[in-house]
Image (cartoon, rainbow, N blue to C red; front, side, top):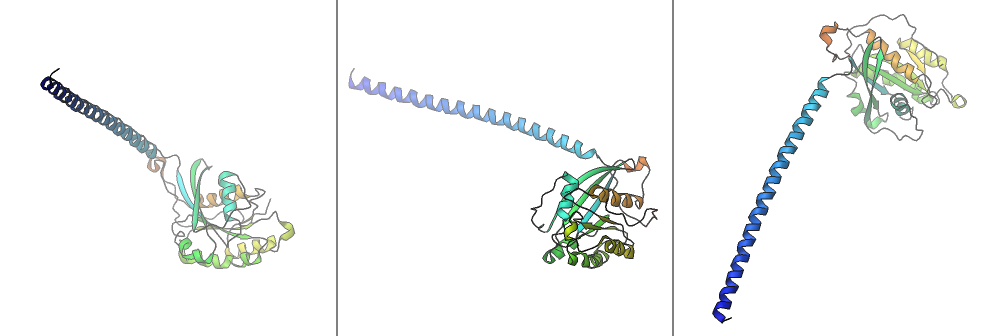
Length: 262
């Protein structure tokens, strides 16, 4: 092959190679673009369907009333243990102190109604005082917890009651809880003292044990029953399953304020 023809052949080959490369690149780009558009449509459709289903789920309320409950008291009295025993039926003696505030949700049935309990576990340390008091407003019920083995936690119940008077609504339902009633060998607050304090403030009283699951469920059902008795219930055609338990006024109850540890 002459030098001229060889050079022409080489140029022709390079030209064909370049054209092939350009053709392959265009085809590849077009294919990727089509796949991208298809994936975009599929993803958009999936998001739309997901959002639609989420909206439908949100539209269907699975409760009739919502009650916001607070657990307050000194650090270490067992508020978190009470909450977890009621919500998850579990007990862990090694819980660390609550930082700020935490909450759990549990739905119960009471007097033929489904009641959603939003239970807030507040920190007992003084440095979190400003944080926790902001949650008092709007609370339907407040459970004041002391430790029957810690005299100071019992003495501070009056301080917590003053905080409630300062920050909570006037008609909030209160209950005093003497926790750790299973620790009789370390008890320093007699049950009679707890009952006397409760009578002084006209507040229901219970002794509980989160460890042995004593009166935990009873305490939450009792405070919920008291809130329900003070909640104006709308006719069924007006509730639509999304009424909120807002307290208005007081209704007398026939049940004694003090309930002994069972």
